[in-house]
Length: 470
Ligand code: ADP
Ligand code: GLC
Image (cartoon, rainbow, N blue to C red; front, side, top):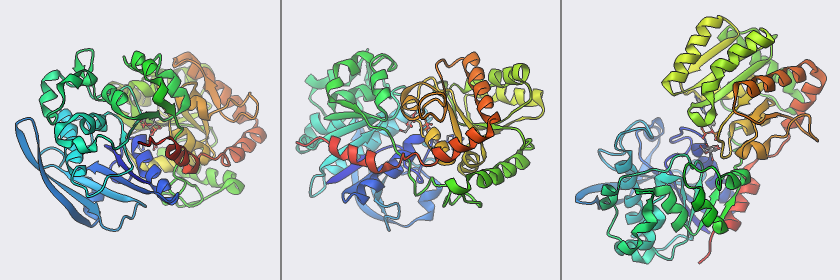
């Protein structure tokens, strides 16, 4: 089977969050299962681009309304990622260092999608499935089915994977002129409440829809940032497939970012060495349990609650634990965390920014990982934490609910709580401290969680069985 993935992120080419990890791994495992998987990405100006050799595979010309532009498709020469990687270059739009967050993102990603379909329409054969990820590729199923210029792509099956329904790519209707000439009787498919909504459009037009955990699929019917009714209506073609983790990248026994390696049989010494190094670097006391948070400071991750949680823990429980936070995002959250850091003096450190190396060191050296997410479609951090012997503390939502069992429940190993509130998170930390004090039980859980299998093999297989056939 030949599968073409279209996405805005793919690790290690361009990663902002878990979408990058998934698109960097799933195609590789599909290849290992004997299929041909290709990934198509915008050609941002990231470090990966300059460190590799590329072949030009296509030069084309297309347009957003009256604005005609040239695009170039290049392919990584050696397919070193385990699949063929293609980048689409559009001068003036995609040639930037960052992935998202520009004022013209609507133009950037629409031009990317229009160019992709234009290039696909010139292939000498048709792939078995076009697999689009999130709203940045969400207009593709519509364009393939209803654009007069690309009528011959109508019968190519499409599948949408939703990694996060909070972001939908809304555009005002004036921008409808960007789309290649389409059957205007179908304009309603683009619309959701008076705006062009690429995610809603993809849910309607893709042959199948998946999201990244079974629980999140259910949640979308009552919490989908305005699209609840659509998910209820389309549920027949929707399913949830839990993400995996790439064990070639995320394995403490071989991790290229770590200097000291360990497995389940050496977890205690291995983690202790990493914890000592982390605590030395951040001036924390290694005799105290270390709680970490790694992530984007956005509403879904509930990082805004952390300043109050840290304050309450130190006030009500005492100075019996350390916190180390890695992340960036909402300036208010950054400011509040920096302020708390100043106030408390020690036992809490904030590393503001994105640092892949440090994230691996933190999963390796921490005792507990905090994920109080308000919304978490799947979540990869908790799966990485498990693999590195770090006990996850999670809110019962989405993929967190599907991957973490409370340690007080049958065969449990993590800490779960219900509300994204300061009180519930503080109470969960209190329960975690109780577990930490019972070092024998704590150590046994650390060893056990390292064996939990969240590898991609079975999820990659599930995608293959879910792909639509004409
Ligand atoms: P999301 O995609 O919603 O951000 P996930 O849990 O699926 O959440 O994936 C987050 C990914 O991004 C993980 O690989 C995590 O380690 C990484 N990550 C998030 N923030 C940072 C950061 N500041 N530095 C390094 N890695 C980060
Ligand atoms: C999104 C979600 C996250 C998920 C990731 C990969 O960014 O927020 O929960 O793990 O995509 O699917």
